[in-house]
Amino acid sequence: MRSALPAAEIDGLMERASVALGEGAYAEAERLAQRCLRSARAWLDFVRMARIVLPLQEARRQIREQAMDAGPVALVRTPGDVPRPLRRGCYLLQPPMIGRDGRSLRETAARKAVPVCVLAREPLMRSGQWPVVAVGPLVVRVRVDPPWPVERVEQSMSKDRDDRLPPREWFASTSEALGDAAIARLVPGDHPHYRVDDLLDFLDAHPEHEKLHQELEAACRAAIGTAEPELPRRRGIDDPYSF
Image (tube, rainbow, N blue to C red; front, side):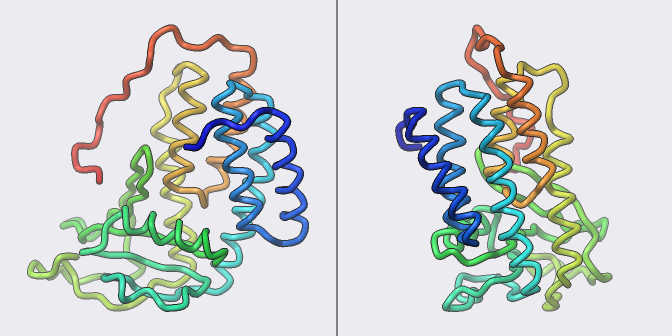
């Protein structure tokens, strides 16, 4: 991250973000609010963080709705499957593409101000489910049912050969399940600053989930006036298969 902005500059950028939000420039509003949020965290300014989260949530809600309204666009197995120019809508990545590729596609879309919903799935499990993964400083993974029965094919990298693109309803429910899985990983009784940091990192991996934003706002308010932890935090590695 670039160096933290001073408080006055944060406020100035958030004014610009509010204008961008009102003008429908949602990608710009998201970009500005996201930078301000991280800067406020660097200053332990949880009051500003709580104020920033709601405009950020609204910008992302609008981006998500525009993507969902456009519907499914592409099943992506290789970079060449991504349309050029990039189109708004929903993209499903599957092996040999991995979670990091999904993150890269979302970041490219944000730079180009193209509203997208991006999900990355892993090989079909013997249970008949697809693991869906979001990658950031923390990795989130959830197992979901495919939108229809899928035949297992051992020779395939994805363990199936289904070429159908799921409907938007599947994208919406899977995105929701992924965010819910992140919330479920929060540790009860953690230091308030740790809860804020975990939520920031989960949102970095999966920015489309509204309840993650609401949890972050609540965590920021709970952290106001609390002292910093005395010792540096050490996170355990609870998923040895994370990308």
